[in-house]
Length: 585
Ligand code: GAL
Image (cartoon, protein in one colour):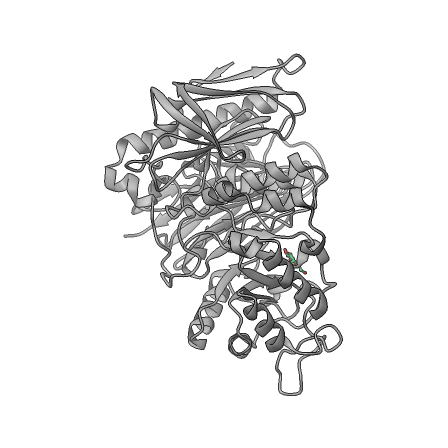
């Protein structure tokens, strides 16, 4: 089977593609075409603008993806100073620190259940009797950096004191303890009444005021920090819900960053939002917590090619040699830490087999060929797919071994499930072109007059992919007998975010259940400014039934960066007819 020169050889039993796979290939080909058009139509300046972009924070932090260890995946809230000191020792003794894992981050569960009488955060006296400054000093004495967890709500997820309304005082406290890295979570933050972008900008400013450089890690369960400009506030942001120690979860989290779980397929994942100083974070590593080494390796290879933060989450005190060898594999880590900072992107995905490409600073490129599917498979990468041709040198980065020179393509055979090969292709020289980001006018409002949302790619979604200019069943949008040529057709719970980019003045739409729906369930339409956390509801339809009169929406959206459209229903078809943003000037 061929696709743009890539040949996949299937073993017996996997010849018949599932419909889902066919759909994914079509979507993938569209995505490849979109960015191929971009690559060929942009000037070389445009092409290179992605490579080497520096975060607007530009404070020299996290110029490569942060590496370290975090307590949550191994221990959840069951942490104390004795355990953490042993972990710090193990980070040094195992060679993890020298391999690059420098941040030791205490996740939720380190603090006392209430603040002291002066309103200060304090460590849990039973778990950390020596206090946080002492544990920080110990971590620093080992040549490591000290990271800590907090939450921007009233409470952390473990219902310990959150930083809401204590922002500056808490950041000052962290600085006085010698903290180098803050993971700022979002439990209970929907009650803050602040937009996420406002909330995280507040923390960024409070951190700056302390005078201590501290990495800020946004933990918002993948609600879409890249949509509202997370890179202006933080060095990394979560793209997913929590990761668990099984492969479905690992692959799901990887795909929130590399696939279309959380963004329109035309983006081909979130690679265009990452770069030095600002990284997509598909959550912390489960390497060492998975059932088999082949799974641990596949997980690690994916995080490395995706330029994801590498925060180990296994119990380092009892780590096996094979897990240690995976986490410290030097040439695999080098791919992750490449200073060019391009997030690897998919160049092939048929639902079971995937190929990722990550152009490196030295002019070579790293390629991951991965079989996720249950059947053994051969995978071939054609050089033309990754901007190369002719005879190319190939090196196996796990084996640290040159495999020789390959003409036009490279094939790996009989890969079992989770089997993969991570190779470096080419010789050193000028950098290979990185694909250009999607042009702004494809996904934001850039012009005066009317922009129909169905003519833009959404920038975040949760639930089913909405239909453009059709109802969900691909028939004309019809409400109360009126047919609309433009709009979005949804079914069941669907949240879709569009980036208005502060450019639009008004948003207009007509909403109602599609006339083709004949059931008795209700549907409900709401519009939020930005994401759900700010709880800024701009429109609420209330429950609508079949035949309910359509509701006209006409909103002032000046100053709105992102508009979140939420439809809720159970097996119901709902339409955002004529949904449009209007920019007066
Ligand atoms: C979750 C977060 C996890 C962990 C946990 C602590 O919200 O996604 O990574 O920090 O809270 O309670």
